[in-house]
Image (cartoon, rainbow, N blue to C red; front, side):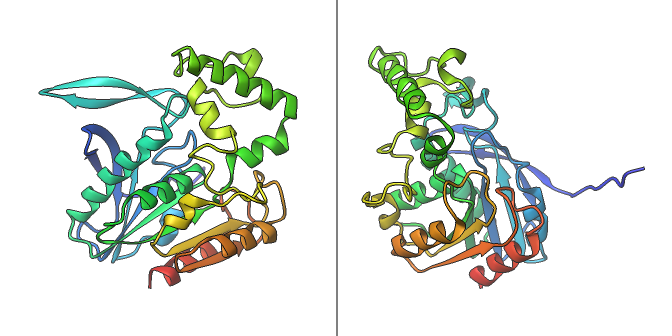
Length: 294
């Protein structure tokens, strides 16, 4: 009979500045010295990366995991309108990338209210782009001391690697036509999407075009200047999985790109023998994060 594992947590509700209500779980002490805010990746949730979370918890460190507006494929969140709560369509298929600023603002405000002196934002996969974009838009970051990027893969690079060029061009043209027709949140049909994840028109263009605001880690574009990343002033720890299945080139080359294109104080660590989930590398991953936070 398999062992039943349980981790105590507090259910929390985060209200963003724009009055969206986001569900979360608070792990660890109620009055911590530091808080790690976890920003999950594309179609992920507050339950993502549990193995890394558990390796980081201690008597001084709390972990705030929450569902941002991109959780799952198609979902809904609540938004306050006066005294009423209204349901708003959400999920990775319909998410507007720039809404991540409001989502992370809400989580940071919640963490600050605990009195923690040090707050870190840890993104996984597409959550890394969100963390970077948030930091590029916030000069007054307050108690946020740094950013942690776990597997900051370029979605556009992955698309170019795994799909035929003509298929990518065809899907992009179709999506852009829908946007021009005022139908940006219309889901792309299966005949167009093929092996891509379910997505509406604006989300497809956001994820899979080279000049999108979301294409922040543009290591696949030799001459592109990563302006958003340049604007980030907070210290950054990049953790790259050596065997990342979404990478389009060797880990050393991607690590070198980050070394050369982050202007803030930073450290880049390649975690050996692990894939995008970092499973099996929890010890090295947690050790690098603890060193960074100290």
